[in-house]
Amino acid sequence: MIRVLLAEDMHLIRGALVALLDLEPDIEVVAEVSRGDAVLPAALEHRPDVAVLDVDMPGVDGLTAATELAGRLPDCRALILTALGRPEILRRALTAQVRGFMVKDSPPAELAEAIRRVAAGELVIDPRLAAAAIRARPNPLTAREVELLRLAAEGAELSEIASRLHLTKGTVRNYLGAIVTKLDARNRIDAVRIATEADWL
Image 1 (spheres, rainbow, N blue to C red):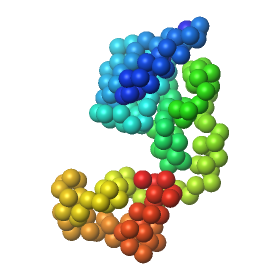
Image 2 (image 1 turned 120 degrees about the vertical axis):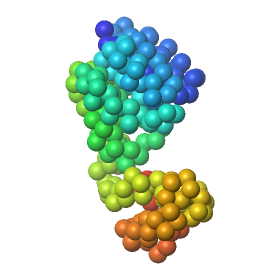
Image 3 (image 1 turned 45 degrees about the vertical axis):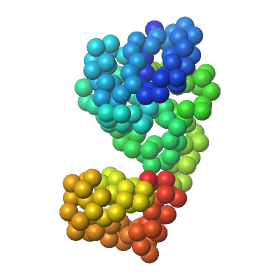
Image 4 (image 1 turned 120 degrees about the horizontal axis):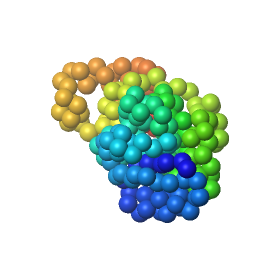
């Protein structure tokens, strides 16, 4: 029997996934959580074989939770299930030692099969995402630069970005200048456009 921990913050989706997996004779959902920071404590308590993690969750995101699992409970393999089927997210997931990566609109039978394969030690990646990741150029921005540019894309002013990230306005200005240079952009707006089109934000 494959023991599964399911982490998904949307109650309806989590309930549907639990119901679908409970139909599988060889899969048992032993724990379900709605927050990323609840993943590791639940995993340490229930010792699942596979943790199915959403990327976007309150507390910490699924990739951070996967990294924590790899460090504290290496026998538990992480499978990311996400609506964000972007090459950059996939690359980050592989860095976080995730063993599976699927988009949420995959057929239920594919999820069950992916769980079985991940439990068996295989690396399972949605083939469409793998192809997109190979074609996409790597993100030259650091995680901090992405965070800062995302705030700029949302329309935040220099002072607001500085306040939210606990930086000085001068430091924010320096970051934005470096981002524009790295992306070979004309200005901040052009940098947002380039990063958005490349799925880096």
